[in-house]
Length: 330
Image (spheres, rainbow, N blue to C red):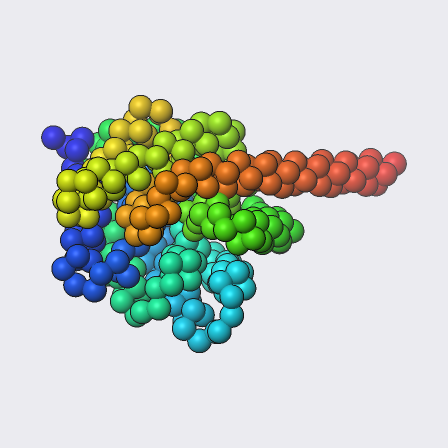
């Protein structure tokens, strides 16, 4: 019984968000990355998001306010607004030393989908708070350790503290990579190659101390399956059977848990990739998996280049240090 408490609670919170959206202010209170935060906070052993629970609440909320504010007050093209938001949210995370990278998605999503309403940051504030409170309850009653999709391997210390291990040059390369893909996305009209969860995926993959960069093919397969399953659940349950969207969301999250367990690979942003079809225009659904696949491939290539540059600079730095040490000994 204990094995299903945490996953069941995760499904119920996502369902509640979609039910609240259908009963109140509509899709502007839907935040697909909430599934990423739930999985990372409740179901992953030794998660970096657990280090500072307050930031799990604060960082996404600040990012959501930033994104909505930029969209509301700055009359520029989406490409410029997304760039500006990426910089500001990244700066917020850096100053706070926060590991809640899905905050970047929280900031960019309202610009991406034109959510110009205070209901969106209010929703992020409420549901992020629910995640923090839920984690405390699951830990207090010893339910979180029984999740059937819980990661069995511990994260490296370096992976748990990206702000302390990644240099400024690394984040500059990430920024250049995002801008490069952003230009491709809007020039080609394939805007979902730069969808917010893929930006988070790019940052996670480009961490040379992380585990994700060691499994690029599995990452590509997981995100492709997540995008395909997302549109299939939306088409079949919502448009064909005319079931409410909260039922669709429940099916999607349960299916993602199945994919994690089947592939033995847990990557929380896959849940957001799978939930995103619930709020994008129906005419965009058919090409959505193709765009996700293209985006993942581009980000993997850029991520590999960034990792190679970082490793090369590290080797050069080590060689210079070794040479100086030898000279000092002489």
